[in-house]
Length: 304
Image 1 (cartoon, rainbow, N blue to C red):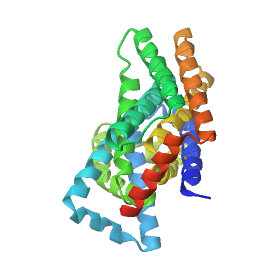
Image 2: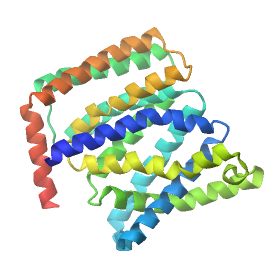
Image 3: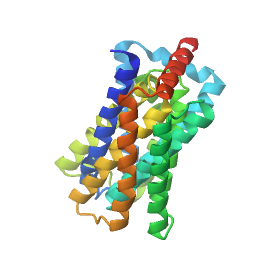
Image 4: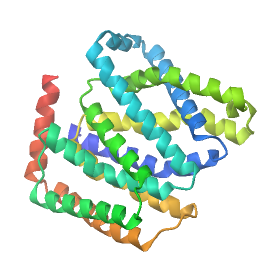
């Protein structure tokens, strides 16, 4: 299996997992969003550290000797923190559909970034798909009548996060190890602040709550590692279009959780789903520009 196919499979799995995760995090709607984020960071950090010790790969932390790389990872980590917090806040406040719409915006951001910074190109069918997707998102934002801050924050932060991840040379697990190391002190400060005013759910919650929190690290890391590995193997444009899988699943997840689904959302999604269908057909037929993007990605990887 070549890198392109492997990357596509990995990112599809990651997006499917993300689409189902609202069911998981909704079980913690009695825990504050900021506390959940602290658990996600610390438990992910612990898992990464155990992995590095087991594999004897602690040398990865030598990257902190490189100031340019350190600054890049600080930016990546902060983008991840903002994205996580916004997503958890949305899920625990019955705004899963708004979160899903945010991840519909992300493909547009990813595609624009791929064109502007990575010199990727769209084929004719993909241009049509891109225009339809933009129209669907713009229609949704206008029909809302207010600025959908959840949608905008999630879409933008994860789009830029994906761009920076493509420029890192570390494996998915190594990258997450650096990111969670940077965020771990912030997580500790958060838990210390929470403990001064409230009980820590990890120690005082019921059995169900404690188990869900304990597995937060595994639940968090799995799709992120898959995503990191996939972005190194496929063009950012493909990363963007395939991400439409996750928010589509989130919308149905939101419906299953009892959220309202307006006519305007249906209209908006119709354009987005048609865009995904057109793009998928262009990939299956082997669009020339898509092949060129893959070739360029492969060449750049060899140079790294």
